[in-house]
Length: 130
Image (tube, rainbow, N blue to C red; front, side, top):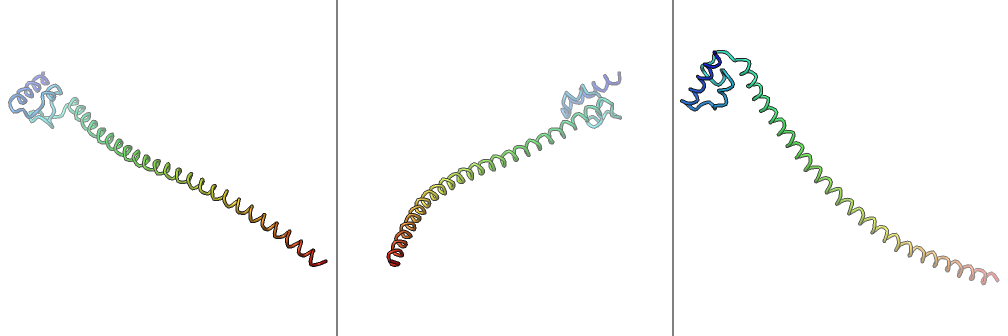
């Protein structure tokens, strides 16, 4: 019966001053909210704990979401940079292959010239020794 009286007091208080939401009226005596309550009931303690837990939980959830979003943005930036470097690496490898092919043909031509010069020198050596 005491709970019903407190609920009536809360309804009257809410109706008169509009300082408390009607939702608090069904919670029972909440001394943190209502001045008519002398002691906190188990229900009030439970509801207060639920509200505090919800606030802390939402803050922690927001913080985790924000950190994951920030980490994800950094990872995306790093992956795009890695892709750019990989493309540049591919271009450099192609240029090196082309460079190697050109120089291989030049090297082969120089080897051929050396062989021809050696054959000419050997002919002149054999001709001069006769």
